[in-house]
Length: 113
Length: 112
Image: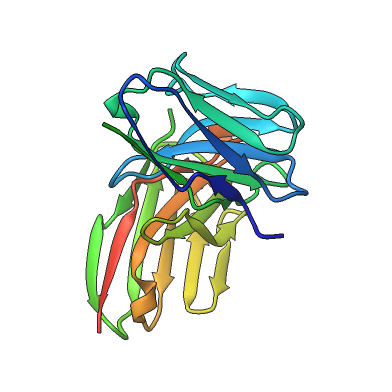
């Protein structure tokens, strides 16, 4: 197992465009989390899945953001009508049980110009 | 919501020195975690603490889960250049239950 994989590593997009990121968790992990990290800050929770069910969404996740995990394996995070304030590192993590330390991917760095 | 504070915000130390950093919370956590993040990478778990008062070591790293369950510290002994990075404390359980809440980080620079 190669750990948590995120693609792409970097994405530059024009304001107003839609973007989609993919996360492949560690195969036996049933929980998958999305976080957002801006420069100089710690990761901020966005949403998480247990298998294919989305169990919690942060108030940070506006209606322009949607996440899916259709078969309980990989997940996608889509941002519609991107804004400059969406520029950040988007981190995915997975774990086997709740409360356990996560394993993070290397993140997708989004720049909205 | 729950918030974590870390101190100091940044540190510059000489190689070989010991390092100590703290984390405090406005509310109780059931699990405390310490992560390290290198530039352009995701955080990597260093130590996990599951019980109030627990003291755990991982090589040159030692961390403790505070008795009040509202604080934790991380010590690094005999620092080396590869210790450079940002150290995050994080907590889960309590009102955050299923998700991990991160502090703002302590940036560590090691001067050879």
